[in-house]
Image (cartoon, rainbow, N blue to C red; front, side):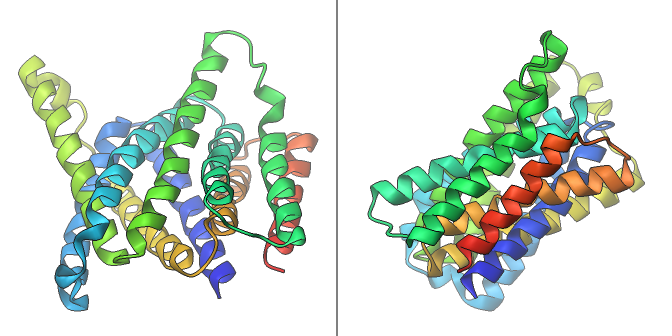
Length: 283
């Protein structure tokens, strides 16, 4: 059941990231993330009330605040990278963030089986292989998406660790405070922009169609976070985080089918290796 939850998180994250990347080509990533997280926060306020989350042990607070800050930086960098780079390359690079929780998990006593260790190695290698063709992308135009994707990878990796810590106390409240933190940070940035000139904010206002896409991003992102929180509370973070980090395969496939992005053979091989790693991890 743990593996299923983590894989579902990967599937939902992959869809969310694809739509987020598309809308970020027309709307500033910070605006996309801010609106998506605000909508998610409103939904979580209702969910937490219904689930009795407000009476939970407050031990989740520091983990949730840290997850909100790291997640905001990671998502803004990721959406910007998706907007200016090739989705099929950016997404796998961001997926290498799984190295962070795997390292933390092993250092703090996780004991995966030999097959699961092999699965971790195969899946991580597959993600790196999928991004390999453009790692030597050349000039600044090619390096900037790569750098942003690496920033996103670090941010996402830290989020896995922080959600794991908060979920030991309350999954719902961890997600709620996580989203509240990111919304407060975005509002702070918006206030700074306001004082620099109202025109800059006005230019970032999305259309109705774009708002619908952003709403989808908000709902699916919080849903994926919830699935990962449930999975991490039940299983080893070193295993669960790798399974949840397979979302690049979903984003790559959607970009290929819908946006008709070309994927080189080595990238296809990387996706297959990542899926092979899933089989080993689920054993």
